[in-house]
Image 1 (cartoon, helix red, strand yellow):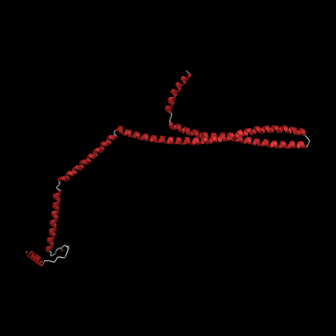
Image 2 (cartoon, one colour; image 1 turned 60 degrees about the vertical axis):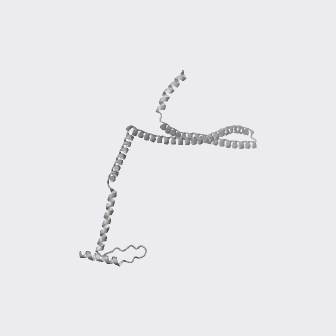
Image 3 (cartoon, helix red, strand yellow; image 1 turned 135 degrees about the horizontal axis):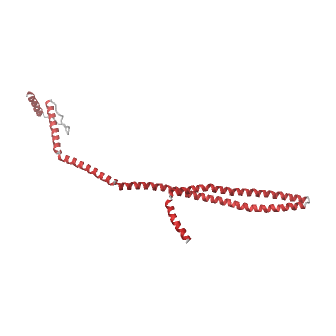
Length: 251
């Protein structure tokens, strides 16, 4: 019954908490927590390193005491003082035992320090991976927000009738343009452009004949076209042209 009650409470409050959670804010908090763990880990590693250094210092002290006691024992034996040599021997035995214990502790401390460095290295590698994943997820979240805004804008266009109005106005503008072009074509078709062209050609011919007549009256003649062999002027034609000009002047 207690398990069922806890499951019921978790289902009620868990759903509410899930609904309130913002993934972006949670990821940012995770990044802050990962960054906060680095100084704590460095502090722990520094503590382990300090323990190694203290044990090394203590081991060197015992080693020095062992050398000193060994020298005193030898000096007491040479002096024939076995009683003093025995007291130093007891102290030497105690120092050796302490040094042995310190050596074992130092070995474990050094192993713990190496393991701590490996753990830190693995943690930093995993932290970097999680940071990159979180940054990419945050960038994707920002892109999704922008796309959602665009989608909302497009939906508002459709709901507000902007698309329909836009299409209708385009259709009406195209229709007016087509009507104007059709009226222009009909106006051009109603004009006899061929007759106008014939009239223009006739005017050009008439003007050319008039110019030619003025040239004849002024005693000017157009040079003949230079095609093939040179033509010999006909004297009879020249005399007739001169007589015609004299008659015209008399009139």
